Length: 238
Image (cartoon, rainbow, N blue to C red; front, side, top):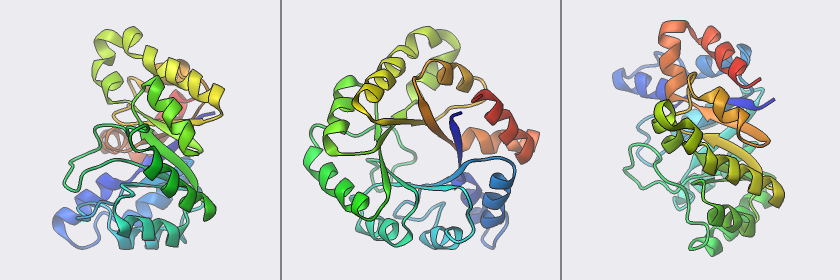
């Protein structure tokens, strides 16, 4: 079964908008695990506009499932955080400092040298590595050359066009996952996956190990409740 990792950035965004500790990020993370999530994802950015670096330290001793930290490894503070926390997985994302949300994967060919070095650093610390990539076969081959354990397929284009072109839009993801598995890379996915498009994506992506979902899941929970929402997402992954 594909694992569901709940990205709790949006909970931090709501909390930060008013100050204080409502909603309680740590409690939401623990509740998500209790309701069936098999992982928790956070993506601290340099300006700490949602997840704060201190949140990551506070979460570490409380979580009982897989902890996935996403971020831009060109930021030294991020590298130091990951090496200090030693999560189960670090997902490397090529974000700019002021980027609203992730919107592209790594050019694994141009950045091969850099990625190889930083991945080696994390792997020596016993941390599983994943590279955020577009569904491009050349980028998948480039990812393999860096020594990464996994890739995370960037799914926005699929999600955006799912309602009208799902059969066409799934093709590069199916091909990318097939190649990744042939190369011995684990396959994760994330960005704008939701209750409408998740099951179809899972069915057509070979050996999908994990999806990281935040915005849609947290939005759905406003109407459906967090426990029910997590169960509904898990159902799509069976």
